[in-house]
Amino acid sequence: AIQMTQSPSSLSASVGDRVTITCRASQGLRNDLGWYQQKPGKAPKLLIFAVGSLESGVPSRFSGSGSGTDFTLTINSLQPEDSATYYCLQDHSNPPTFGGGTKVEIK
Amino acid sequence: EVQLVQSGGGLVQPGGSLRLSCAASGFTFGNYWMAWVRQAPGKGLEWVANIKYDGSDQYSVDSVTGRFTISRDNAKNSLYLQMSSLRVEDTAVYFCARHWATAGTLDHWGQGALVTVSS
Image 1 (cartoon, rainbow over the protein chains, first blue to last red):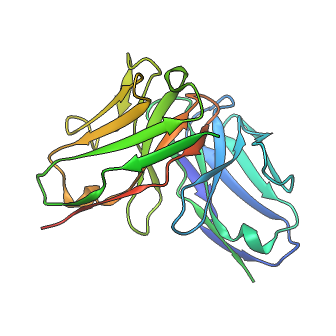
Image 2: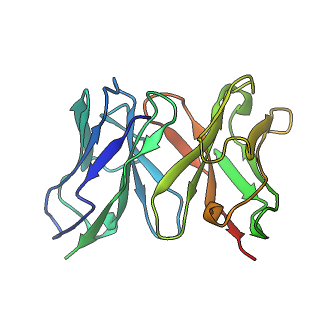
C-alpha cells in the first residue's frame, strides 16, 4: 500500500497568513491526489483534485501543487473559517490512502 | 443537486451484524464508482471499500475483507455496506461518497452514520 506522510500534524497561524501543508507519498502518484477539509462533526469536503484543480465553489485562496511523490496544499491569506483538519488522499493504487491529517488553528 | 443520504447506523454487540445504506439522488448513479470511508472517534479518515459503477469490481481494505461486503443496486440508486463479525475497533462514523476512481476525488459525501460496537 502507498503510504501518505502528511506534515505538520498541527499548526497555529494568524488571519492573513500563508499556510502550507505537505503530503509525501511512498511512490509516485501521477496526478491521483486530492485535498479535503473537515470541520468537527461534518463530512469531509473536497477542495482540490488532480493535484492542482480547484473544486467548484472553493475559494481561490486554496491551491494545490506538486508532482511525483511530493504534494502541497497552500492557503493564501488564512481566514477564520479555515479552522479545520485537512487531509490528502491518493487513489493511484489500491488501497486508496489518506494522510494523517493536519489540524489548522487560528491564533 | 447531488445528495447522498445515509441510514442504518447504531449500537451492536461484538460479533454482530449491521447494514448501512446510502440513497443517491441528483445524478446518474450507475455512471459512478462509490466508496465507504470511516473515521474512528478522534482519529483520521480510513478507506473501507469501493465499488465500480456496474458492481463488477469491488475492493476492500485488509482489516475488513471477509467481514464487510460493499454492494449496490443501480435500479434503486442505492449503495450498501453489509458488516458482520463486528469488532470493537470497527466503531466509527461511516461515510458514503461518490468516487471518481482517479485524481484523488471523492466529490460528494453522505452525512455519516455512527456505528458503535460495544457489549
